[in-house]
Length: 335
Image (cartoon, rainbow, N blue to C red; front, side, top):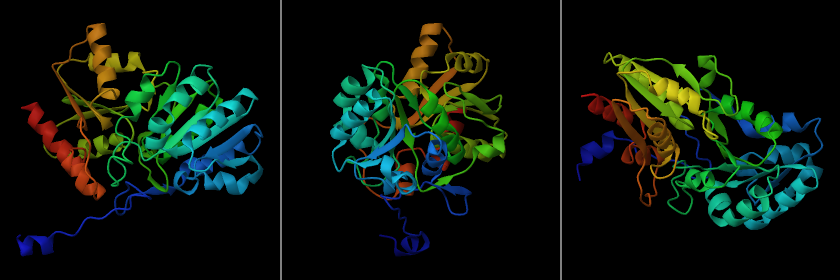
């Protein structure tokens, strides 16, 4: 080993439990989901909160502190969590059920499918650590949650980018009549979209910046990465547009088709999810069915494999979803 190189490069670390993706010095908001839910529920006694032993790590502890009589700790039992939420919804309540995305999707899938979705119950499932936002390895990395949830009829799916997206999404998913699965960032969540005159609208994609060379279609924190990359590539005279798609299902097909139909641009879908079954394949299917064929079309996402454990910056580099790796791939694809 080159000891000199080892000394120069700082050891990368991350907390798998906190799993904040904010970089040093980045603007953040603390617990936007929890605070938004507390505010929304203030005059709505039908809103209840449930969790599977993860209140602190999904920011639902703020709701528990504000409304202890409306908070239900279900223990480490995700199937019970979803079944109970469904029962409460049948009685006219609006349950917000939180856990980690791996546990909410893999362990409780049948209960979401049969108890909640088949009866179109008004349950809001909000799950932390989506995709590659923890270094704990495959047991905690929900790299396939969107693929699983997209297959459930009638389930609305939301993948917010930042704190602004999250806090604006909470009242809208609450008012939506039917089940919702929302990916959740917790703790100190980056704040970016306020710089782009952005407002969350359920079911709508938004163009955050225009560009003539590349169109990036993205969701979740990959929209943040896409905006970072767009700024980086300005120095290379590469003009990058970013279309943020916070609602994965139903897809805003009209906006996507309109943007992709503009000629002469490399079209790239960037997502914090496996390249199997997520936003990329949803967009590709839409374009094929509608006969819209961009000059070049590429995916940036997580590979179809079990991912390593480790520090998040290292893993994001390894699997090509860091800003630096994204920029390099985009430039290569332009040639």
